[in-house]
Image 1 (cartoon, rainbow, N blue to C red):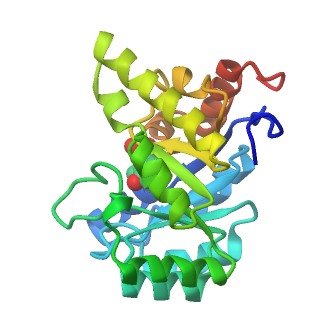
Image 2: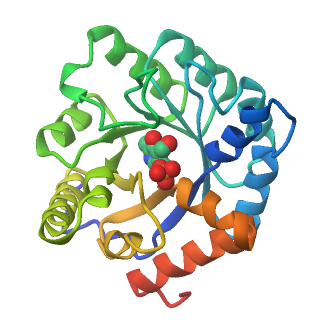
Length: 254
Ligand code: PXP
């Protein structure tokens, strides 16, 4: 679809990543805090999506969490996953609304950098087709780079999630350059007909400028929301972020 016929999304939606609630639970091997409960509160506060990353090492989200969330989430369920045989099976069993394919290294603290779509093997491209044919939306977590965007279109993705990590980790002039990169990538992605999401490292300060990028339809945010929730409660932390995003975008609901 050409950019002249496709309107920029007027509303920006929040996907809440509840992995860090599970991290706290796993730390002590208790049954609490439960990410299922956090997801319900996030939805009640206005989140448009719940995101979980089922990692190969199961360091936070467990198979049980994914199975229950599939039954309880009333908005959209987005599963972040590595493109492995085991994870594709988990997705086909649990049927999230979308999968977001991320690169995954066992030793990393959190996802570092975007997926290199150009280097996906034929087998991996086949796995994407299997997921798409099962009716699951395909999102690829990529760096804000034109070649990655083109490659995402080539492999049949419907959504790209632009990696905001470099923008979040820099400051001053360097950060302005990273923001400009995100703007260009969002425009490119939109013109290629993709739905544009963004995320990683976004907090209650640095989200404002990203939310102003008109082509971005969705932000996936976890760590900063879960941290604020410790002091103000989960619903309030989610609602604060939604208000901040809406105000930055200039939406009436802000
Ligand atoms: N989007 C993707 C693809 C991620 O891997 C993560 C981290 O799990 C997030 C968004 C959320 O990042 P953060 O927890 O820093 O808000």
